[in-house]
Length: 230
Image 1: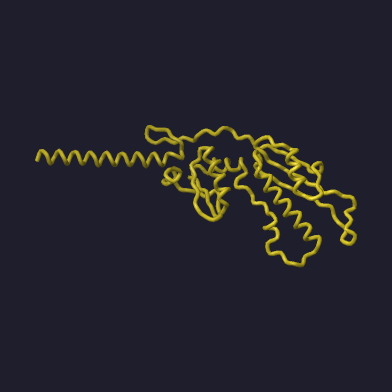
Image 2 (image 1 turned 45 degrees about the horizontal axis):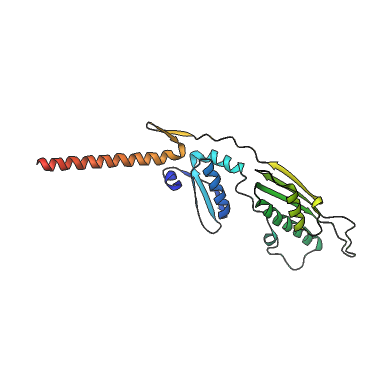
């Protein structure tokens, strides 16, 4: 249906070269906002397009849901192309970044979580003695949510993913997604009809087709009657 409605309109790509999951989330969000859209592509290179007249509403709708989500680097991405010989400090920092990325991915999959940021601070260890100087591992989590989230559950989840990290040492900050005002469909006039702007092109094409069909049928009737009289 989205292809039919967009067929007569100039299209604009809002989401490009993204994973299919993110493209699907964008499609669902736009559908809820009453914006006609469709996706094209394959193998992690999906594109979501809308009619130019709907770009403003579409951008606002996607921004409200923080879409498309930023891909957080995890273990695989962080260690791509890494050499065998690296400094201890550098490897520790890369490991922290990778661990935080994996945790953020997991938190992003929780119901009600729109976006997640995680920072893990591991205690510095003396390279010779292995002593951590009594310091403890700590973590800070920032969650942007669309619904209530169990903070204690988040703390336990993060603590369970980091060796030596206690749930009490995980700080969680929640922010609520900006409330989206109820959207009112933008209407366009097609003859005597007032329809949603996204449907205007499809209605025009339908009316044009019906008019053409009526003309063809009228010509056939006239020709048939003329032949009978002749």
